[in-house]
Image (cartoon, rainbow, N blue to C red; front, side, top):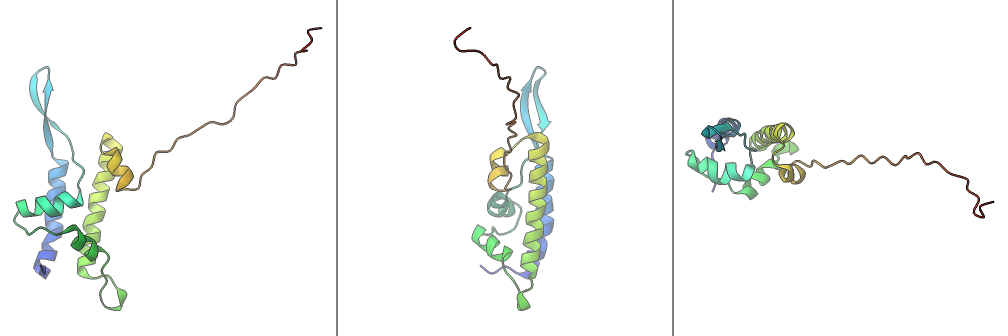
Length: 140
């Protein structure tokens, strides 16, 4: 399926709508006062945005392969084209929110490691104070 320039130009606005939904997501949680709605931000994902969110919101879905082809596409003279610029901007916005959700709420640790390239860093202290006792083995 060929996507029109109008479709490409509408993607950033749709991405911001999706971001807004991710940031304002609420979940029902059982509390001592009964069921309460609690704000719980979601990590935005490309796959959900392309395959589910866009069709639910009046746009055609985009195959992930198409998305990544656009992401690496270049125009004439090797310069990025409009599709590439649009996709890179959206991808960076999704990553920015994802990093913030992981950092402030501790959600999506595996997502952070696999998609965002984050790693666990362990600090190991290899210095130790050792007291050497000089003990006569013959016990004199």
